[in-house]
Image (cartoon, rainbow, N blue to C red; front, side, top):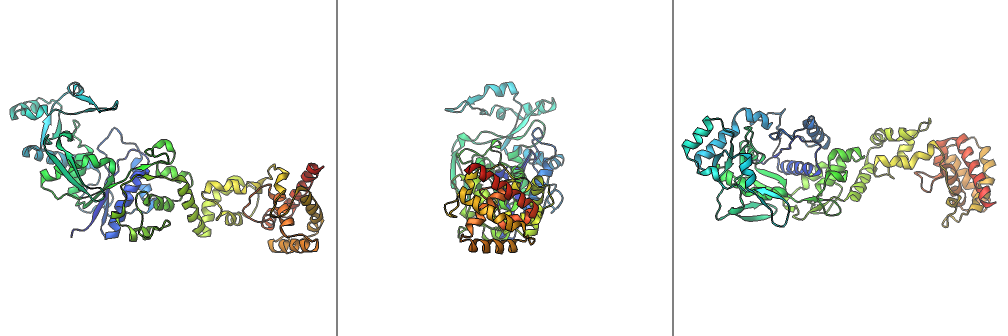
Length: 488
């Protein structure tokens, strides 16, 4: 059996789309599961769409997600170069295109843009127009072709596909697929600028680099018969095809840039952890036998069986991604969590408070780092709040009972010097017992008074310890005055 070799072959056109990241991840998992090689190849033959800095984005994304490659532009495994524009200079693609011409499997085409415009036809039921080439230049004699070449007339090289019969190819997910050859247009292999098209360069490079498994989105299913015909024309072994299902948004429409979370960098900027994104993307069209959802990279490698991939579109469930990120945050090492959370905390809190303690309080309560602000902003400044918050059926508190409890406890607190969480809790517990109150009937009003929030990351005494004695007493007094005014 051949050693498994997969590749990720992105075009440097911008941020890495979630679909491209999934392709890279699945190719990586297939290779690592089988103990094979994972190759990075930069496909920059479409020079017009290339974006400056996009190769850096690709490298940063692969590094951040842990998708380490065995061969690539900076790791020569003997089949480089691994950048297609560099391969063009060596003449590789033109050499193989001319070989196809000699075999009658390809031909020079000298048609002008004006002539090609006349061949456009509308796709049934749509406004979309496509050009279906009529093989006009296939019938030029060798002498005519040579004359045009000598005259410097611009040309492309087209694949010579049959117009009758059928072509069948096998995909490991979708099975055998048969298409009528009448649907196979004579696609361009070499463009007029001498660069190969994406389709042609893919086939040549995959063969020369020994790629055994080709992973790509199912939008390329329709191109696969043309790929197969190229492999057969050269007499090369056809790789295993693994087409991934479409990724849609929650409205079952193709995930687009307008969604705001279609790329890896979009998600990182929103506060998602790279390991969360990898875990989530792995489950967009695949599931392990035991239906686990939280999985490390090592667990994904061990469990990944691409035969369990789905044919159905995968829905990008943003709510599930948030939940998953929350699970990762809960399990994170506290020191690492603090270092990552600290910038978000410092955006809100400018007082000399125990930020690490605050980070520990919110770690199990947030799904994104950007959620932190709403949980801790009261530490910086007591918000305006309504006295209705003092009413709690379960705690058996009302505005009146809260006013009474706070008024009684205030002088006790003013005399207290030990402002630690444990000391405060024991003090309040004893106070409640001596005054015939449940703990909640004193703790709930205090928590409300010092936070002004319905929900807080900690209990009353924890918050009071962090806020400190002076600030806590100021807030408790403000709560008493607010309650006094509301109950008349």
